[in-house]
Structure formats: structure tokens, C-alpha cells
Image 1 (cartoon, rainbow, N blue to C red):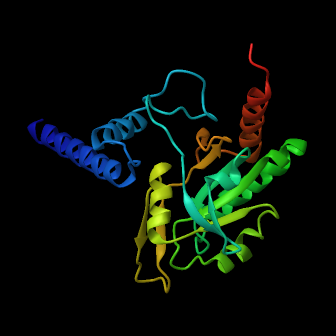
Image 2: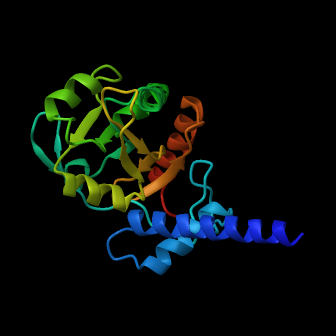
Image 3: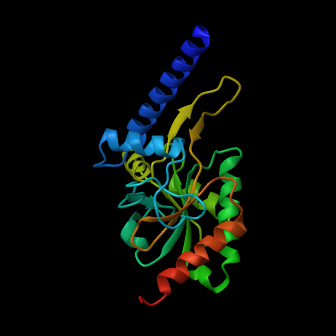
Length: 229
């Protein structure tokens, strides 16, 4: 029994230590480490923000995702969040050398946009790379064109990408594997519905299908367009 207690205590310590490290890496500018740690614990143990569900996933109390960024689009033009002012975005953080999950999620986003019908013109699908070392504007232009004609690919310096990722609590890290010729990027995999104000309105887990994302996006757009009572 004592051995089991010690084992559980060790596992708990490792879990808390890992959560603390993740909070330190992914905290947003201006967010204290304590606030970030509390938010990640809430996500881990199912803590939720009171109010309406955000695309099937609720955010912990006090957690704000999104905000300003300064990046470069697939044409080589410098862009900020102001270039998307007044528009909604279905946003994903990934990279062009990703072997599996990124193309799957980008395909889901493209299908969700098409499923919106006339409302699709209000929504821009966007990929922000977490691998700016390889993902040049030209590389992104060729890649995003495979998924949707309106999809935007954004890159930038290592610092610019890291700043954008922090604002969305995105985890990513380079992984070198002996059996692979190219390095890979380990990363979190969420789809974000970003409102015209640059803040996340809905958050979708990887298992969300295009119909689910389209339905939640349509509901958010209709809610935003409804006259205030």
C-alpha cells in the first residue's frame, strides 16, 4: 500500500510539473505564470467557464485566446490582425512538412467553409506555420492552395511565430528522429474560430468534423448579426 501511495504521489508530481512547464511555455503576453498554470489545470481537470459552449469546448474562467499578431502572408506581404478586421477566421497552427494531422485538419477546415454556403464569404481559412525555418511564403502558397482557394498561409520570424502561438496557447517543439531524414514538429492541434475583434469565439478539438465546425460557426455568425435586444 505504501508503495502504491508513493507511486501515485510521484505521478501527481510529474503531472503538476509537466503542467507548470506547459503553462510557462504557452502563457500569453501579460499573463502571469500563476494564471497560466491555473488555466492549464482547469483544462486538464475539466474546469469550464460559465456561459455558452464555445464550439463544443468551453474555456476556463478568465482564459482569453487570440489578439494582435505581426506575420507575413504567402505573397511575402507583412500582415497583422488588422488585415482581417471585420472578418472571421477558421485558424490552425501547423506546418507544411506535417505528415498526417495537419493535412487532415486543413481538409476539415476547407470542407467546413464550403458547408457554410453563402456565409462562407465572411470566413477566411488560415494556416499559421509553427515551422518558419522551412515554411517560406512560396512554400506556404503552394501548400495552402491544395486545400482551399481562399486559404491564407502565414509565416514570419521565429519570434513573430512564437508570439502568435503564445496568444493562442499553442504548444510546439522541434523533434529529431533517427529514422526520419527531416525533423518533425510536435504541436497541439486545435481549430480556432476567431471573431472580427481578433478573439477566439470557438475552439474545436481534432476529432471535430466539418459539419460540427460549420454548424458552430454558422451559429456564431448568426448570433453576431442578430440585433441587440
